[in-house]
Image 1 (cartoon, rainbow, N blue to C red):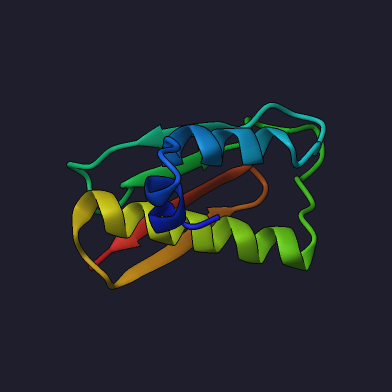
Image 2: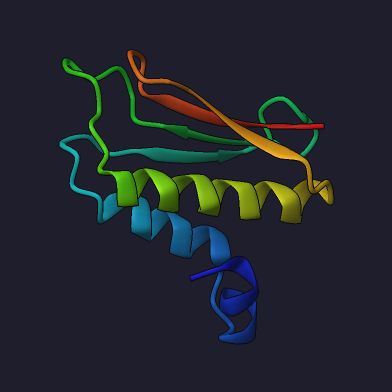
Length: 97
């Protein structure tokens, strides 16, 4: 569900995203952090430092990227957003130009 859909349905998009992260069942509890003042890490998803790298399916990875991008655009008002990741450390973050 996109941020606009959440807003239309009176749902908190951040809580919706957090709940979706928990539903991934990747063996760790991911956290969602928002840093609207930092364009190099406006949205951060941290899976912690897992013993083994977090393996997302192609669909999960695409959905994660789309949700992070939508959230970053909504809090920074900048459309040019890139998703970066460090799979070894379990961290995904956005970069906004």
